[in-house]
Amino acid sequence: MFLTLLSLGLGVIALALLIPCLMLFAEIGLAAWRRPLSPCPLLDSDRATLAVLMPAHNEAAGLGKTLAGLLPELQPQDRILVVADNCNDETAAIARAAGAQVVERNHPTQRGKGYALDYGLKHLQQNPPDVVVFMDADCDLEAGGLRQLAEQALAVRRPVQANYLIQQPPTASLKSLISAFAVKVKNLVRPLGLQRMGAPCLLTGTGIALPWDMAIAVDIASGHIAEDMKWGLDLALAGYAPTYLPTVQVTSRLPNDIGAAKVQRTRWEHGHLQIMGAYLPRLFGQALRQRRWDLLALALELSIPPLSLLVMIWASVTVITLLFALGAQIWLPLYMALVAGSALLGGVALAWSGFGRSELSLGQLVMIPAYLLWKIPLYVAFLIRPEQRWVRTQRDS
Image 1 (cartoon, rainbow, N blue to C red):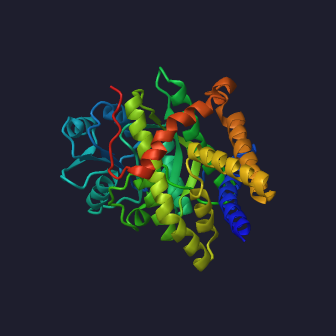
Image 2 (tube, helix red, strand yellow):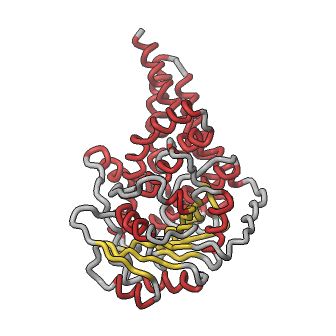
Image 3 (cartoon, helix red, strand yellow):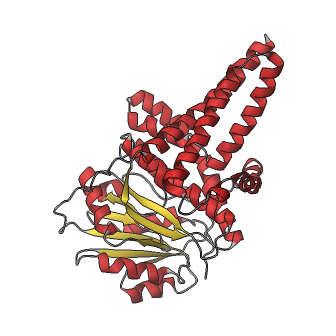
């Protein structure tokens, strides 16, 4: 009886591992399939009003460059609104000098990007635009991307996420290279696969366009450390599931400082895990209750933990099921773990072959196990004391 229950428990664990690994492989496999991308629909949107909403907390060092890239993209009826949020530097003055509209916000306890965006939306409500594009203050949007994002949002009547990638610092370490590859898999490869299966995507942080009525459809005021992911899921539950636009690229720089990179990675991954715990039951429940394929697809996408953690979980489950199989001669949980591992490793190989060769050599790729060792304290910290406060990543000077 005990062996039966133990076998059943290990089978459930192996199945819980197999499902996200198969979903990951399906996404990457579809992304690697070289089918031409559908062109962005062309609209007569010259008269549509567009507002770029940019939260900025002590961004004086890089804000000028970001605005210089965006301002030439504006038409006469468009505007950029910078929310100088709890700043003690020259952020507001630099934004005004560049030609952007500026509102300043100061609050002793409500800190974070979500609160700044909410403040900006309330200001825009006095004269609302047709489309809002959310941009971070340390990012660069490729030429022509602003109008493409706006046209796509108006055409499909859904939130639209641009292709958000990380630009490597000049002296990138192996950790930085592998980390950037992981971000590319998360922000480019997997959303592209979801798009090709007709599924929505998660919001990944910046380069997000929404028609005005959707921008104010759900409450964005939050200090959550993964506020973008949370906001996208709230929009999906409200009936506005985000979609992906791979033809528009926005880039931000991975911090060169090891400590800053660690802070950023901790915020991303602890936030992801917290969102999984809070939203997976809701997504699966509403998908079944409303019979919505889009919510089921988002739930399966969200069920994939950060890649480093997924590899660690797979290795642990494989060892446990192997020991159990050798002792009890019950092999099904081990077989399920091996299939999961094949899907996981096959997906990583496909992603590298199709999208990562130019940035990461094969010799560097095989160093991923060493990278995983560096990540262990991050996940231990989540079990002991998960990050709860929004902490701005220190920018390179």
